[in-house]
Length: 367
Ligand code: FAD
Ligand code: 3HM
Image (cartoon, rainbow, N blue to C red; front, side, top):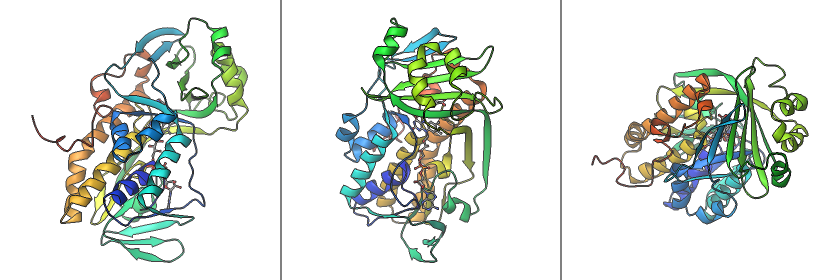
């Protein structure tokens, strides 16, 4: 396994729980995550349950009463998402949850170990010159995947015009309530402003103490995309968020331009790619990690049941990829068109992946 992010940890855990002997190589000297908050939907929550990490995840996460969308501070919709399972949480909490599950399952984690490539015959190569043989090699090494690049798989990378800077800050609910008493500050609130200037704050409570805020602007807007953030600019547009924007301005931050990567194929021989290595997507539908975990799980199940691993991997991609493709396509469309600003966005094609249950053994049967 190359990469100890959400994809790699999930696949490693699911395989180890099925009796595989799993070694996970992580380039960084320590296993940890960068970043702020995250939203998970039924597809990944089912996987969390299946690897028996549900109680841990639930202990520090929440389901907000609604996903609210505002345009110029006028409410467009308050989607209660009835019947759809979703949770908001911090990335460090998801990471710790998965790391504990991996360790309990007996995954051997090797930190400070950089993978430089893999071959379809089952050879993995390391930066220190070593190599090893395996029945299955998984490239879960993120958007810059060395495993993927070593296989020369044709890929298409598209960049969108907007991007985002993410922060984890204290909730400050009482202060926010004082500024805007009629607001339900436990909601996710997607504050859009398109006119006269494109600036958006996605406000996502992650638990009782921590708040995830994401500040979006076009990459071409030098002040909007500046880090540390331009506090005067952001508070002038979003005065009701001043207390939490002040906290955000104290951290350096990193502006992330939206991008999408599509590969011609995800597997070659005994090598499979999952997560951002295979299908990096725009975050509009909050499905990047969700798809990573869903594919990690289904890959582990398919490989365990296989008589012939290369053939099983091809089958796995054929059956599972449509659920990722639709999330990727919709997220890119939302990012490119900014149509999310209209509200009522979690319907139809936009929730096909969110409501998928990858752990249902009968999921591909036609009814
Ligand atoms: P990564 O997290 O990138 O992990 C890859 C790991 O591999 C890293 O630990 C890295 O150090 C390691 N590595 C890299 N190269 C090597 C190498 N050569 N050898 C060994 N190790 C290596 N998704 C959601 O589901 N919900 C959300 O709400 C959400 N919000 C998002 C918001 C933003 C702004 C962005 C940018 C993304 C968001 N995502 C969200 C997407 C999600 O963050 C990613 O899809 C997910 O983290 C991908 O996980 P991964 O394990 O594939 O890759
Ligand atoms: C959860 C979430 N949703 C949407 C975006 C986005 O459109 O940038 C980012 C997110 O973290």
